[in-house]
Length: 143
Image 1 (cartoon, rainbow, N blue to C red):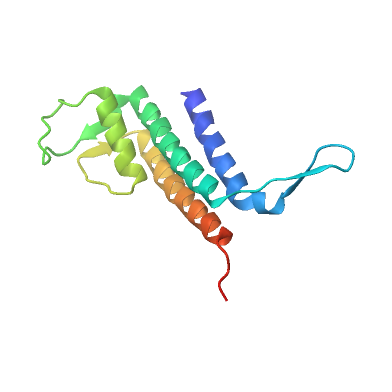
Image 2: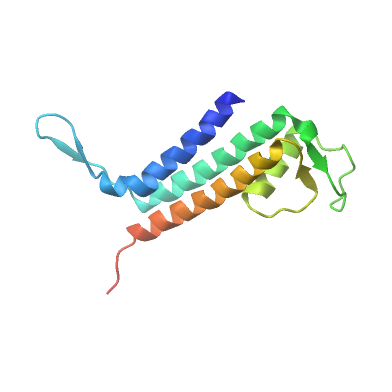
């Protein structure tokens, strides 16, 4: 669980670096006055955004798998029998619903998973905001 938590922190830190600090870090010194210019393309921003969003989703699902008994099934409105979902399905469903901020209400975290769900929802929204802002800042200015 510590490894998964560290990976979540690493993904968020890498995204912050790329979206906020890459524009200030365009020239990289290679040695004797040699410079290599780092360019972030809109395609790179979009692809990394999608991949990091999915990685964050799966990482949080792994955390939910560790203590699956803390995910309470609150309704059977979508046709699931109580207890019919496996550990991975429950964790992945909760992770997707939380990160997309849909919140169907069929699964609810209890115990120490509640603050983890808050962190996932907030980091998912922040990640989307960072990538949209970075992408829009790369578009050419039309006079």
